[in-house]
Image (cartoon, rainbow, N blue to C red):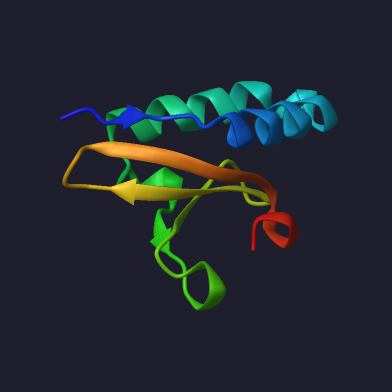
Length: 91
């Protein structure tokens, strides 16, 4: 089963800003998105639910320092990225 990534205008702006600041991460970022579409539960993504003010969202790892927060709608097989950045930015 593959999932559909749905990019909002707000997320696209955040992602563009992130990639402008970290061009060296573009390959890892794109690989993360591809893997997310194919299998969001792949162990290398380290998918986990968030709590507190971000309850209802999930997070996946680009690498040890950078994350993508997302809304994961399993029933509709849709994934909506919300934010991308380092731990302090997205949390």
